[in-house]
Length: 338
Image (cartoon, rainbow, N blue to C red; front, side, top):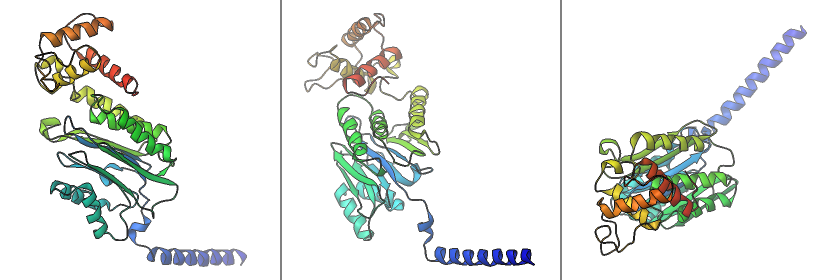
């Protein structure tokens, strides 16, 4: 009899709990049951190449397709912390039609009067903006906007996270490092400053360039980590793998090129490091821009650089030389040897 009563009590209690849960669930929209999207991101633009891109991380599974929106020759948008994620492509459409980042945010506010969460925008002319809703998640949230970039995050370890984003990107301005490298370095700096207070799960690095990427698909870099406690470290490894396999980093094809963007990068880098002068005819034009023609003057500068750094005296700019130059440039801007 006692056993029968105990079973009856359990059944009744179970029914009450189920009914209560059903009532609570019925009072919420399906969206209210989803995990909260809280992330940290930076969007950026490179005036030398026209590249636009984003680096983003979150304690959120498969964050990339939800929060990162990038279009070659148009701009990059990060949607976070309650933003209207489904409107990412619409915002890019507005930018492509000629709207400024400020106008894009205003149109979005008109479309969603209840609030637009947290959004970073940079367009393909370098104009940038960020916004952080007051009604977002608890813990620290905020943003920072600077020359050719916008950075933001919520549920962060503190304001030092967004500060690290901005400091890193600004310090690499004019360094000749590719935009993808600068964005990833900024994300790593933000993570080292505390990052997402909940930890890591998803991360992405996307850079688009008109005609860039494999067979000109526009995805110059498009990498993502969906589920890892070491998502940002894993993203760095994936990027290193991308460089080795795709060989798209400036300088990686110098051995095969006699003119073009890689040679311009090489000449500008050698000038930065003191191995070429800006007024050398045949290497730089009257405005001080690298011409991008691999000639004897450039080859002699390479030979001097290699000799000074214990790489031999060859006039060839092989990958060993390129990696050495990149490391020296990173050291000058505080990026460290990568």
